[in-house]
Image 1 (cartoon, rainbow, N blue to C red):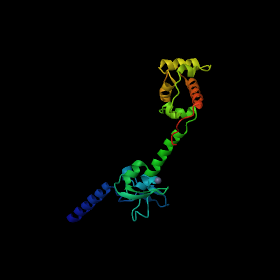
Image 2: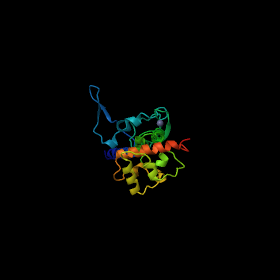
Image 3: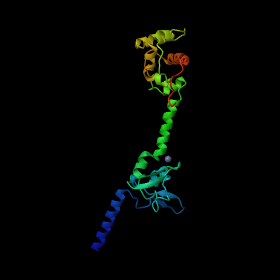
Image 4: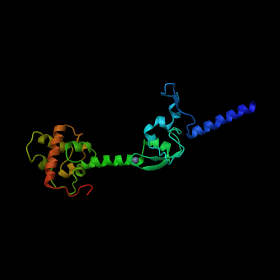
Length: 222
Ligand SMILES: [Zn+2]
C-alpha cells in the first residue's frame, strides 16, 4: 500500500517535471454528448499551442515533426520544432521563439523591408513629406549639390499670401539659406511657431518648384 502511494507520487512528480519543460500531458479539449468541443478550465499557460496560438500552429510542419503535434506543447516550450510557413519558408526553432515573434521570421523581415522601401520610395506630395518627417529635406528631395540661394531670394521671389510670413518665421529660426532649409527635417519645421499647415504646404511648393529647375543629382536606389 505504502509503496503504491509512493509510486503514484513519483509519477506525479515526473509528470510535473515534463510539464515544466513544456510538454502538454493532457488534452485540453473535452467533447460533450452532442459533439461540441469545450475547453477545460485550464490556465492560459497550461493550454496547448494549438489553443493559445492557432495561427502559429498552422505553420507546424506535420511531415518533419513526426508523431508530435501542436496540441502537445505549450507556447512557452523550449522544444525545437520544424516550421513551414504559408510562403514556404522552412525553420527549425523553439516553440517559445516562434510564439514570441508571432510567426515566420522571413515573412516578418520581408514585410518590414517593404514598409521601409515604401516610405522612402514615395516622395512626391506634401503628405509623403509628412510621412517621412525625420528625413532631412535634402534627402527627401534627393539633392546633392544645393544651389547657393539666400532665403530671401527663394521665398520673396514671388508674391503670395503667406510668403512674408514664411520668410519671417524662417529668419527667426536662423534659416538664412536654401541649404540651411534643406538641412532641416519636416519634424523640425512643423514645430516652428506661426508656421501653420497652409504655410507649410506653400513652403513645400516653393521647394518643389525651385528643385524642378535643378534635377536631382542622385536618386536613392539607383
Ligand atoms: Zn515565411
